[in-house]
Length: 158
View 1 (cartoon, rainbow, N blue to C red):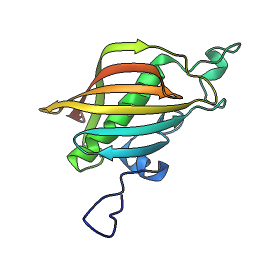
View 2 (tube, rainbow, N blue to C red):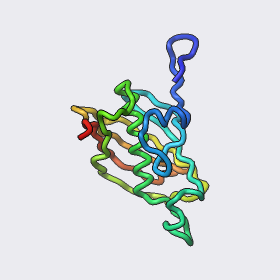
View 3 (cartoon, rainbow, N blue to C red):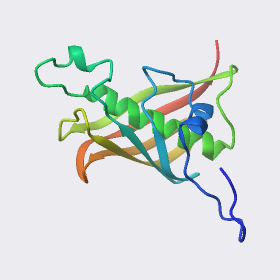
């Protein structure tokens, strides 16, 4: 992130190179391509560009490719992880692990397929003793594809 010239405002966009500093995931499991906006301690908006080249499409389903709903939720969790690290003011390291520990109220409203751009909005609901709670919504063309409440935890590595 780079500061602008006056007033201490911060450019909150992140490209893939910066995202790689905030998530331990790598291909084929990295599901966030760009961060559009992040307000530490509040909210984040990110993108996942869904390509026909995704490794899950040949098996889900060959005759009608659909992004698995669990991966849409995982994209929300990865987006939430970036918000958590930005809020804590640090990055992942080998001393701790950021676990996805719960999903509540998950609903799938619209299939996501090749060529879609998934816009993921996550809002921080609570953070207490290393337990993070979020509300997430994933949209395609402004229509809700999926929504869920997520619970994540930061724990020391075993």
